[in-house]
Image 1 (cartoon, rainbow, N blue to C red):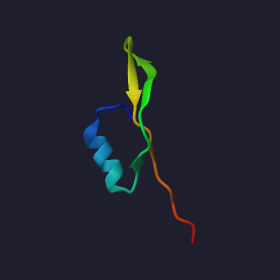
Image 2 (cartoon, rainbow, N blue to C red):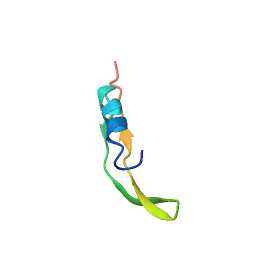
Image 3 (cartoon, rainbow, N blue to C red):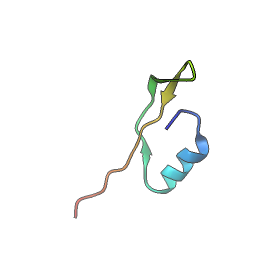
Image 4 (cartoon, rainbow, N blue to C red):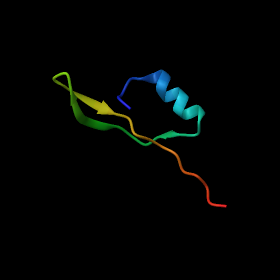
Length: 46
């Protein structure tokens, strides 16, 4: 998810996803390098 999309981040966090960090200048979008916020979810083993 692109850095700064706070509403989307809140939806992910409400569904047990966690921000894993920031990937700086991860991809080029409309001529500008964009940071990325990777989210992840760990499902506990039974």
